[in-house]
Image (tube, rainbow, N blue to C red):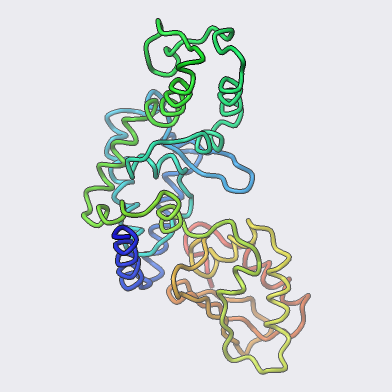
Length: 314
């Protein structure tokens, strides 16, 4: 009960301090995390889950030490500062990374998101009539290679294997991220949260639908008989998740839904011949009252297609 009360206090505190720090700060976080988690940067590996791709530090031998140490420490500091500022990480980290930060053990679900085939193989080991037929030992799980896997110790082996793949093989990187994460004192309060709660706070809601985005919109300046708000909502309902994220990046510089009570304001502008203009400092979209669905779709598509690294806004 006490932990629940403590979490509520921290959540209220975060909601008070998570006032929008402005478009430039938002853009800074977006560019930093997008760059350090990009394919061209060898510090992290992408876990290509179709619906929710995430990132995990690369295994230690694949990173350059000691040069990488400072980058991982800096990443940890940026991560906790982004949480403090209410800025969702644009490229979400895996659950295993958050569990390491929270001193929690990884499980089969964490491994399945990283390596589904290995997770399935480990499940089969637990289900076999005789695990000794596989002639496995603890060596490939970071343990004693002279210790064979048996029916009696196979659960221990599976747990060790999961921990080795997700933690031990990349422990130097994870420890440096944790060092940076814990350098800012508020991180101690964040450890009151579960892994799922902290992931939601740090990375925002990404598995979204058009209705989720619509629920964050407020319209101003449009006459009651205008069809533009209705047409925009219809377009959002038909967008894929990646298109919805692009729409959010265009307006807020973030690919996740706004946190807390933050809203996206859609304001009417007088011109009907120009494209929509975003103001990321205010989470605002200046939208002409086209009153025609095809025109709205075409103009919005032009704006989104021209979205580039940096603000890239009119």
